[in-house]
Image (tube, rainbow, N blue to C red; front, top):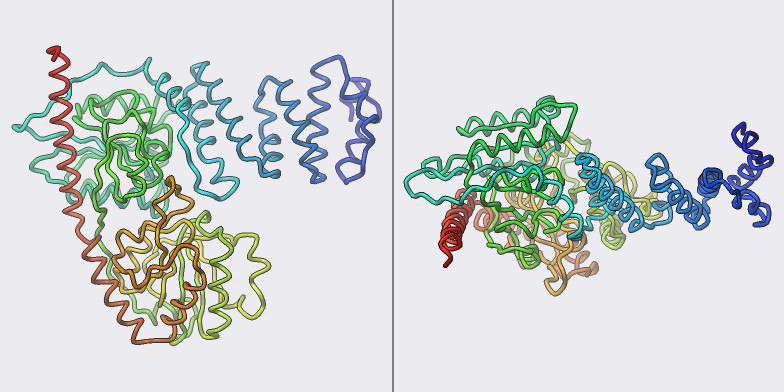
Length: 544
């Protein structure tokens, strides 16, 4: 209040209070404040009006005032939190992305690498944060900006060198070591378990600073597993300067003289792409384990995809390799797992697993809840979802609410999965490892067919069709009537459920149970690519 008295703006605080509680204000009453000569005065007037209208839920007006304040401030980041809150409340995620991109470019022009990468990461995940949706797209200006930032610090180029008389040196840039139950880390562990030590020398590099990694029990255990296979693990050194830590890790990579740098999620965290852009290795291969805009940069030499749809949208040459993992075995019986959660032994459990973004389609919830109303001895357990979507408030009626249970992320995930009689794949964004794990444990999985006649979207695809090998349990995309019919048969026909259980276990072992072959196939890609790049280099050098 004192500020406005100093500025000679009597009565403004009263207007703000009235606006914030929803009173309608005559525009003429605002004009004297909006037309101040001082741009600094107008900045604060617009900022305060934006805040007041946002508090009142009038984000249409709030957007006008916050945009004006943002422009007057010269994109001062102390006004950023309110700008984001207002645009998020209005559902305008694109404006949030645009602001983060602009700030990233601004920081990059000032050579503030860490700040630029942080804003580009915020740009990348705006839809995930504000819409709970896995939507990603390429922005070549962002990628070019990061490449330009790295270019001034890039290492001297090395010739790709293929030599049959020595081991090929691989440097894996690992994403997800500080995440709980990361599927990407599990895939990295598969590589560490099956790489041919007679042909390859492998080092795993982790861009997260050492203390932040080692203080996590799961991360420390994963590092121990990799080292037990005879491979090296190098963590980014602790530093108050993140960019210094990244440069040091990149130097470690360069000095290890790798033939190939393999990234496992280079655009899921732009720090990884920055390291790759420093050119610590002569050849870069990206593992495409999801949306290409999260994994593969167009500047990479090659990529490897586990499934067809991401491969179709890869901006580089790409080899399709059937993904495979060490399949889990059941450690606890179905009935014992149910008892742990207070569910009667003979009651049936439907289950779905995944992140928040995978549970945003109302239609599948309606179909599943209808099954609960028909089958009074059936429960629905949702794993990985800390809080239900807001629309469930209307759907969770008293007759079923006690038979719907939400469980957040858990350490002993397989024991929780063991209580399921039927697993229902998430929709429209289907799961991968959940489907594989459930089938390996003999649990029938119901999933949806994929639509290949569209651009790839992580928010709307079902990869299970490619590795399930179970047309009996695949239904047409979005056909929730068919979903209900199939669930009804699985819940009521004990013999059919047992038949599907046996078939699921057999088929997933056929399609996804050979991790050693998957790693050999990837090794063949590495060798072929390195040999090709070495020949290309020699041809260019000789002017051929």
